[in-house]
Each structure stands twice: as structure tokens, then as C-alpha cells.
Image (cartoon, rainbow, N blue to C red; front, side, top):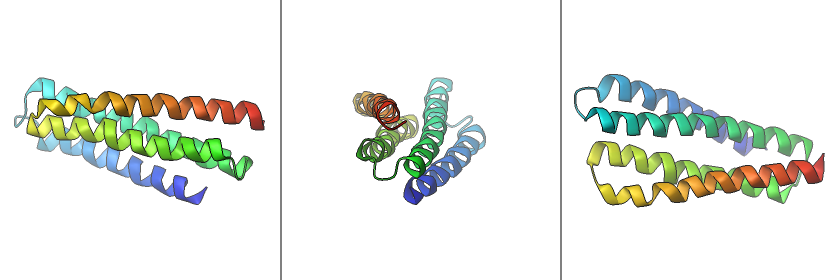
Length: 123
């Protein structure tokens, strides 16, 4: 439980920091389109930081839930793949990274489905 709360805090912190960096450090350095791509990464990272808090809460209520634990790790992987690929794409312009982003999106979807199943089974 603690690990997902801490990871949620780290992810939320990084989301705020990266959002500020995008707004102030990247403006004028990357195209408007790439700045929007960066913002999408920040937004999804923050949503899933909150998702990690949900995981931590559920694990406090449903200790030992392997579905919830799996959802948390998959959410972390989704953040790295989805938001991470968008961040790198924004500053590097390496278009092939766009092929990685959907894998992160699938990870996010999978994590939310696992959380729903865990809640139905455990509550």
C-alpha cells in the first residue's frame, strides 16, 4: 500500500514540475503542437498519479489483493510508456516514439479494468 502512495506522490510532484517546465521552459523552443503533446503527457500523468492513490486506498481496504497490486504496477508502467514517450517525442521529434504511446494507453485501460474487478470482488 505504502509503495503506491509514495509512487503517487512522486508522480504528482513530477507532473506539476514537468507541467511548469513545459509552460515556461519549452515555450518558444518547441512547436505549439509539440507543446500540446507535452501537456497531454502531463495531464495523463496527473490523472494516473491520483489513480495510484486509489490503488493505495484499495490496498488498505483489501490487503493482499493481487488484482489491485497488478493494477498499480501496470499504471506505473502506463505512465512511463504513455507520458514518458510523449515527453521525449515533444523535445526530440523522434516520431517512432508515437508507436510506444498506445502501449501506455492500453496499460492505463488495463489497470482501470483490474481496479474495477478488484472492487467488485472485494467490496
